[in-house]
Image (cartoon, rainbow, N blue to C red):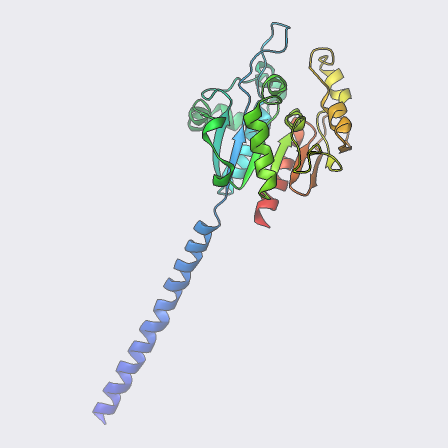
Length: 264
């Protein structure tokens, strides 16, 4: 009888140990899945700090970088920053004014780590779309004079699209689509629902006669199906792999659409 009881105790003990081990295996599987699903997004910023021939400074708009950067970073997305020249990309001094302060810009101004990362952007020529899941272009007037005509940027965007990866642009950044083409040779935005900084918004900041072209006009001339919301209000569109936002207030909305796209 004692032998029977001892045997039963051993069996129960082994069964209990096996049951206890199962959750550990499941936990390991969950962690592995998260690592495998980690996404990488490339941020492309302007290197131009000259506002045409006005003698004034420009660059990228802080909100349009900070809002999507933090939204994606907080969701575990791995981010890499590049620019045509590498190093510190110029910040539009107007975007640092108190009138344009947002929770994202306040966070950025206190975030020495991100400021350090930003000061050391890689050169756009050093990256390959194969290493990333999507690309994001923050706006600001600066890019109208460099990224629009930058062949490396043009090729990068076309490569993302050709490989079925999302391209997200906001405010003035849809301008970088001006010279991009589909594999059939037609403009990338042809037949696509798009938005961007509007003619009335450009007029409001009194730069209509300074910029080399108006984003709204260009998108329409290239065959884009342009639409817009109210001036300065959040408005963004997704059409296939292309995600466009109208103005600075649309930055986070564009990032949300991109995040959703990455999760599909």
